[in-house]
Image: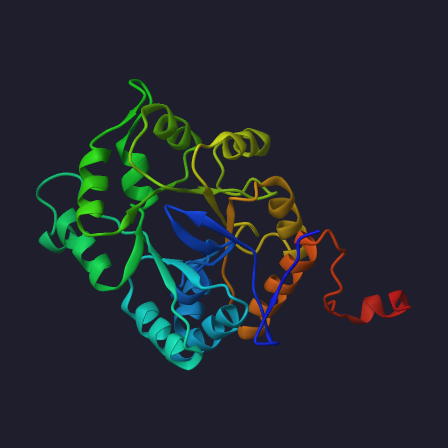
Length: 288
């Protein structure tokens, strides 16, 4: 059984791991449901953007921070940074920022998207980890030669700015090739969920890749962007990743944040969750 300690007699401290010498909670706050990336439809994206505000995002971050979940993954985004500042002020706790920038891979793009400028932006926003987004990482992947082209240049630039490099990928080969070639990264981001949503090979293949990865893995989309209910999606990922790996999950409201945290604590303790169930008229006869 995993033992969870209390801080000041109040706050549950979520289990932690070490990545690149930095202590991180094994749950990382996702931000798609803050910033409007629903992976469902344009109207859903628009709803999220219209609904979420600096104040509402800060309220959700406060819930996570009270459980000791003090790391968040996001693109470089000013709304998120402002909400994070508010949550930090309210709780007195620092949020570790894991930023995932995209940048120009070829000359001729907008100057503000040149890698130097994007990495400078991440540093200015207070990033501890800088992990080139999948749109950059997977474009550099060369399966034929078994390399990730130019990656040492970019990880070197990240190190020069006193940030910790990692890679975000949707392609399973990225982790395998990165490990084989020994590139300078401390962690990986990989899609992993029981539905196989956005995964490029069978789920058991990705499960094995994560198991064999030489660095800790931050899995994303554990609920398949809302296609799995939390008890199902979370039970799968928590039971099939290693103790050094992490689960990244977002929430739309403070109540959703509390639900996924409490469910995860139960599942990590090998307990059947006792979360309140949603009710409809058709379920009336199921009550005991």
